[in-house]
Image (tube, rainbow, N blue to C red; front, side, top):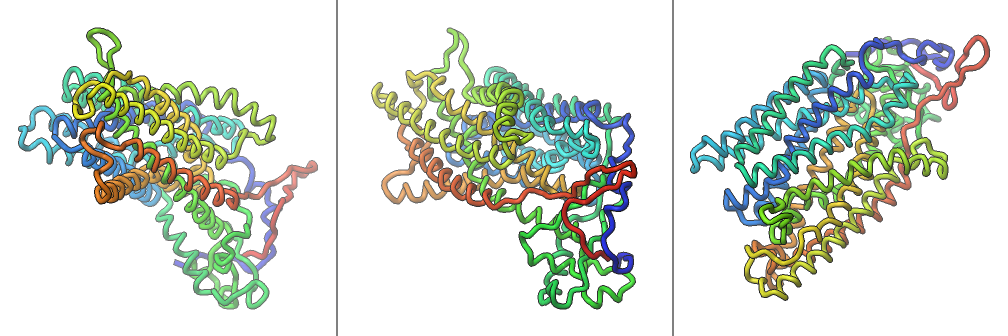
Length: 578
């Protein structure tokens, strides 16, 4: 439908202070009192996810009899699908159900999937376990699709950006949010993996199903405290309108044929009204979508497929700026997938004795990543940021892009170190005549793997948290679930990238002698594979630095209160509007 418009006039929004004053929300809802419930829900969900993902390759190789390379690909594929479904879940949340209802529905699906998984390793007959197991895995992926993009965004929505006190609280929210979910993941890796290795797989998966039941109950307990955003309709329609309108006016210029620029505020009623965006110079071809031609000026109503507002055009520009960042972080996520695959298989060949009757489960070392993050996040927030703030004069210490870039560098160092340790492991096996005995324990402590797990945690503190904040902060208000899904999908596509690299490495290495990645790790060249990842990551970092140097952060109108009349003076851009 066409939208009603007002006659052409000078944009005088800055003369109406009431439009830009902090929103008057129900103070009994939202804030930390509401967000804490959602954080505990996410902790329980992460407990379930990592309790499954952390040791999945062990079940696939030892119980289902899959080759190591095939099992690694299956783990990567499942993780990838689990991280891509959130794009669909975010679309449903933002367009139709809203975040609260989507979280409720997806949590129920997730719980049912975990119950089926528990049954598949216990009461289901042996000959039918494999198809039921994989069916349950992908039901869990569907549940992840609705849960992942909405929970973090829903929790962040509990802080009002127009309230200075709550806005300040939100700046630390992402650090403490990540700290919470890492706690859940770390506990799962220590407790659940121990149950899987020493009691039974049914017991381990049963505990995970119980955690999801608790999560669902907690979410419902906090129901009356939540601030809930209404669904806004398909955000992709608004994006498409900008491209269509710009294409229809491709010959129009501001100096020839244009009657001004449409600056009307057409955001959806009922949504949080954030500050209006300032016009930017990037992607100027899209500006044609907001130029008013003679036909637009004659109309009593605005055709949204021919004329878009300045705010709508700038929202699309925000999306386009994030795409290169998204692409340049895929290699980072391809590297961290080694955590659930080859790092675990390395550990399974090494000496794991802590006491005469206790063996460290190889997957349990993943808890070191969580422990590193538990230590590093408070250090980052309470030590690093204040010191950096004094040096850079930036309120956050360093920018989001700088934070991400540091993590990308750490991932390169991680793969170099992992390759060195793997070389030492193989040399130890050769020295003791164990090169052709893949199931023998190599007399080299599993704690040699400690540096690569710690570096994985440090990389996460910089890049993963940085991406979370970037894709929340830089997305249009009504598309923040999509932003969360986009950040999560980096992990998913990164897993597919890693699978592709494995396939290419296997193909090339088999043509030139022997495959690098074989069931007998002692006869493999896993160290070469790690160094290939390090080289690709180094190239990727150079590309990222080039992309980030041209990145423009979101620009909004700023207002200063002056005189007793409290007029608001706009710093920036004044235009003709419809």
